Image 1 (cartoon, rainbow, N blue to C red):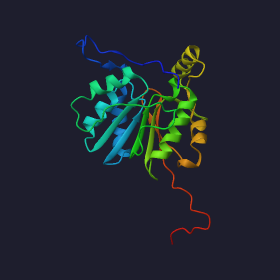
Image 2: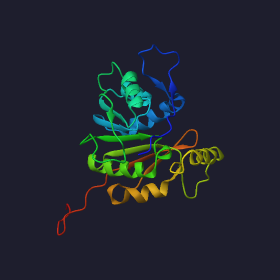
Image 3: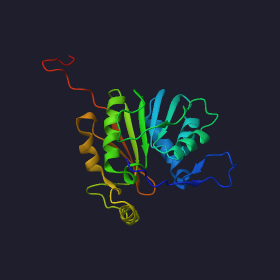
Length: 224
C-alpha cells in the first residue's frame, strides 16, 4: 500500500520527546463522529481502528467510550508513535499495531467493530478492498464496519469543494481520489448487508456496513 499523504503536522511546540502529531480536521469532526458511534458501536468489545493516523480520534473516542477496548493501527511508524503518545494513560487503549489494510494477514484475529476514518481517498483502491476483506474475516454477523469521509454518490450532487479536493488528490497520485459509494457497495458484495449512510458536516458521510450472516449450508434449513 502506498503511504498516504499524512494529513497532520507536529503538535505545537511539543517537548522533544513528544511524538504527537496533529490533524486539524479531527477537532472539526470528532464530536459529530462520536455522536454517530454512540449509536452504532456495541457497548463492549474491541474496536479496531484501521489507518489511525495521528491517533487523536482514538484518544478522544476511547476517553468518551470507556466500555470499549480500542486497538489503533497504522502502516506508518510515525503514525503509530503518535497514536501511542496521544493515548498514553488511557487504560482501554492498546499499543498501536503495524497494519497495512491491503496486506494479508492482519495482526488481529477478531473485533467487535472496525473503524476507518478518511483512508479510502488517500490510499490506492486496493487498500479499501483489503479493508473489506479483513473486516469480513474479523467481524461476527451483525457487527459493524464504519467508514467516514467524502464519497461520490449517484444521484447526489458532489460539492464543488469535494470536486476540487478530488482533483488535487489525483494530481498528487493517480491512485488516490474520492471513491464512488456504489463501488464500495459492489466490492463489499455478499459479505455485508446494505449500507446505512449518515449525512455528516462538511460534505462527508459515515457509512455503516454490517457483517452479513453467512449463507446456510447446502440443504440446510432456516429457523421456523
